[in-house]
Image 1 (cartoon, helix red, strand yellow):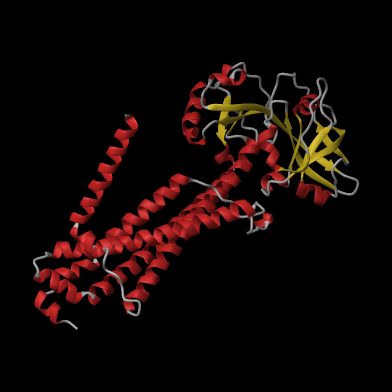
Image 2 (cartoon, helix red, strand yellow; image 1 turned 180 degrees about the horizontal axis):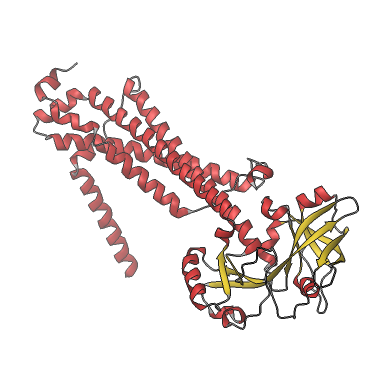
Length: 431
């Protein structure tokens, strides 16, 4: 019974739609307006159709590329530093943090807070990295077993991640691929890390021999040129910290859209001597750069839309001029200017819909090919990635299609205003 009711309902809706279309006289006439294949308007129609198709395809591709580019850069930064870094407040400008221990429930039981995805401890210590042939100043970033290695693994170019022993500290480190090239280091080579011990008089040099077990590559100079990843227990041993002391915590959110809410919450609930800094502020140069690119893209999209609107207005104006006699005949038969204008608006909207259909096929097709086969490579030293990235944001695809259709359709009303000035007698005589 429910199936038969559905069939009856569907048939009734379809029949009502057909009747409505038939009774819609302007739409009925517009469906039968076809440009002569040899006429000038036919050529202009093809140009307008191509303009809408290519314009929408370019807009879709540019939005998906920008989304992929932004997402790739953000993921590289967040995988390295989290969304927030909580450190002890200090006026010291040193690269090394002041240690602290927090018994705040936020750090000990992060699962109790729905906006938090993960929390991990870290610490930094300045060092000199020495290979058999080269020496360079680096910053050792100490991490522990809580480090989210799965999120970081896409940055690993060769080798693997550090293995943490049950006691003592790991004698393994990860260096950047660029650093390994400059220092002439290969995977599984031994290197020396030299640390200054200022607790003695005079300050002494402490050395640790460690093995390179992995090479990472983010393409970001702030990380690749100076960060070496090691065990935080090594930093604790060098600094004479207690096992429960940390340099800071990295906080990951489940939804980056809640970053402002999380910032207010951390400000209100953290201990008075702790400071939570958004990573987007710490590395503001990258995020400002991406915002600048986004502004340029908006200007680019506006220009493309303007060109498509201008082409459609020109096509409709030419179509009106070629159909002047038909306009006069319709007016002589009693049709008002509003009805005649609707005929040409519907005709233009059909052309827009066809162009948008082809534009979606072209744009989404090219994006799929790039996403699947990586046919367009990039120089990682300039673009921080090896190929043009694609982000499938269907909400933006829908929004672009709706806005394109509405804006261009609204522009069609301007050239049809000339119809109200056409006299039926003069139009019928027009040749």
